[in-house]
Amino acid sequence: MSGNTENNKRIAKNTLLLYTRMLLMMLVSLFTSRVILQVLGIEDYGVYNVVGGIVSMFAFINGGMVAATQRYITFELGSGNKERLQRVFSTSLQIHAMISILIVILGETVGLWFLQEKLVIPEDRMIAAMWVYQCSILVCVLNIMSIPYNADIVAHEKMSAFAMISVVEVVLKLLVVYLLMLFPFDKLIVYAILLLAVQFSIRLVYTAYCKRHFEESSYIHRWNSDLIKEMLGFAGWSFWGSLAVVLYTQGVNMMLNVFFGPVVNAARGIAIQVQSAVLQFVMNFQMALNPQITKSYAAGNLDQMHSLMFRSARFSFLLLFFIALPVLLETNFLLTLWLKTVPDHTVIFAQIMLCISLVYTTANPCIIANQATGKVKVYQAVVGGILLAILPISYIVLKMGAPAYSVFIVHFCVESVAQFSRMFMLRKLIDLPIWAYMKNIYVPIVATVIVSIILPIFVYMQLKEGWLRFIVVGFACVLSVGVTSLFVCITKHERMFLLNKGFRLLRIKK
Image (tube, rainbow, N blue to C red; front, side, top):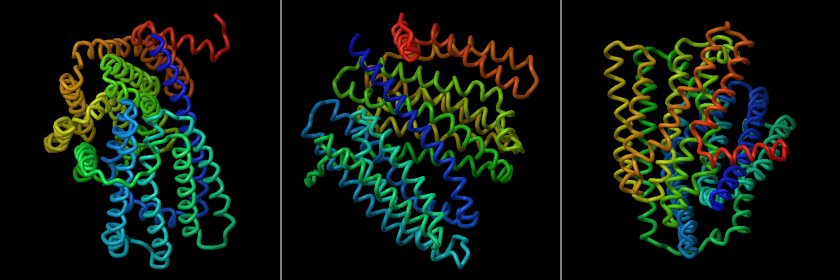
């Protein structure tokens, strides 16, 4: 029991640190984006984004290795094999160096051709665009080479390092804004160079932190073909899963364009921004808990692994539901407040996509658990294949004359099927009892949703749209979801831990 209490304290501390980091970065991003847009002007700001977007497409190649690096470093740390941990770290650096070289080659050939021949850039801004492009390639390489160091920090659960280094990054980005207004040279070129300097400085700080605190982060030049093959195999199947997501999301976007035109694409884009903003709160909690799931498997403690999975799924759902419920009820009011003029379909798109996100919160523990086993081939092939079914089904539905939002209903249904397939595949991989999974996750979640929506919906129906209803509905949501979660969704031990934590924060002694 004491071990669980320590884990709970560590998770709570790490989650708080990650939330602080997220809010700090978000506030600075909102401020600097507005100022930089004013300093650069709309045209140069657009050039920067479209040129940087070319490099971002190449960076997708590294997607599978991010998951592989995180999994292998966390697993070896959990197993306690320090020698293999150092080999994994050094090998991951070698693989990321090879990926960096590949991206540089692609960037200086295919990417450069696309920039010069296909992009529409004013002739007098082409030199500046080239500066931006080359700086973006260097930033991409720095980010790729830093992944093993970041993965090491997450594996050791040193979230305080992220919080501290984020303060340094924030100061440097604010300094960029100040210097950008001072320098008399081409603002776009200066901006690209300064951002490269910031990224280089932050990478040095992360590297120095790891070398000082973690023995395994010292690189050893030893070529391990078997380990490289193993990690690349893992990354390859993880890449297939990521590629499936990109294919069905972009495929649906193109289908909406073909059937309904660009206005519907704009509505989808806004809905995705709403979904991404809300999901950030859950992703930080999951980031704090994920390493412990992998470490439990590495230590052979499957009971603790199952318990962490149940807790991650329930708490992730509750965290998102806290925020999503008032947004679901007041979507039109919030979008009108933000955009003034809301494109058609945006409200229903945002509402369905939030529901999809609620389903997906219970998927993350399954994804991390599968990665912990290292047996990702069948899992990724099956789940990726199921998710790709969104494309043909959506096409058939739209061809039959269904409305635009029907593609998101298809996504919701297929995502639900994919989640049950994840659960059944894990039954053999980690001895996951299906009934225990249902009992500990879906039964309390469904009961919480049914009970907690009664009061907010009643308040919503009694008042007219406006600030008063938004405030009252928000209060009703927090009260209803909070009380119901405490007594329906979480266990007695978890409830006592949360209440004790709350009393300490309020400095109330029992």
